[in-house]
Image (cartoon, rainbow, N blue to C red):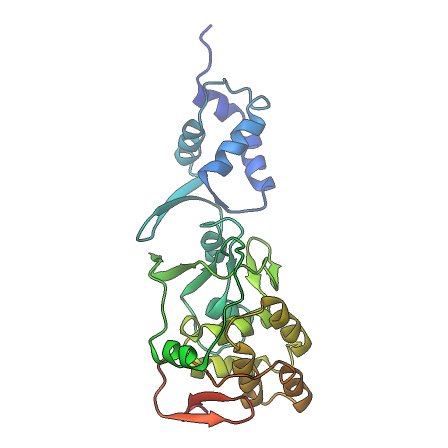
Amino acid sequence: MKKPSKNQIMQLYEKEIIKELERQNKNVFTEEDINRLLDENRQAWKLPVSTTTGDLLLFLYKYHHIKDVDIKFPQRTYTRYLWGHFDILELACSLAKDSYISHYTAAFHHDLTDSIVKTIYVNKEQTKKQYANPSLEQHSIDQAFQKETRTSKNVAIYDGRRIYLLNGKHTNKLGVQSKDTFQITNVERTLIDIAVRPNYSGGIQEVLNIYKNSIGSVSVNKIYSYLKKLNFIYPYHQSIGFLLEKAGYKESSLQLLEKFPQKFDFYLSHNMKNLSYSKRWKLYYPRDLS
């Protein structure tokens, strides 16, 4: 009697294969994920040693259990395998291990903006580096913030939406929380991130609007704690204190941010025109900010 083919064996174990996919509690798979499933279940599914990841993928394609998509970035194309109904944020976070949703996308997810945010910001942290404490000087701050801010070119288009894959500061995922199928910055961490990079958050006016919408859902004590741990080179605490004041936070919250030193004049954003100055926060900001 002729031995059954690999495909015939997989047909016999189709229900078991589907159950194993369901057991993963995810809807976006990498090739490595599929390879691991095969290795872990090869004996249970009675598949010969010669069965490859490609064989299993072909079976899953043939019976319409998965589909593949290519996400094309300037330097690399990522192939992902989609199973059932998936969240595009899960797809975005699958592009880099331990990455998480951040900035404007996180603000939208937390219902902090009235805008419909279609751009997806995904942050993959850099590895931890040892830096000598840099000496900050006023003229270097002035020069840096008179220039246009840098915006990542590591962007792909999927289903009409832009996906930015950012390579952010190492924070050991400070303030990152887990959802069902992806990770995302919590509200406090999001407010810090958008103050640091307004260009990934709809611009500085939209950042202020998000701060206004955050009143009642934020622990300023937590923001203070995060800022101490993040230990930024630039005095972003001055920007955040100003935004909290402008948004209408209570005085005790503002006084907490004033515990940080204010050694330098700072800027709310890069390359601003028609400036006003906050003496309280030693901060330049756009005159038309409302």
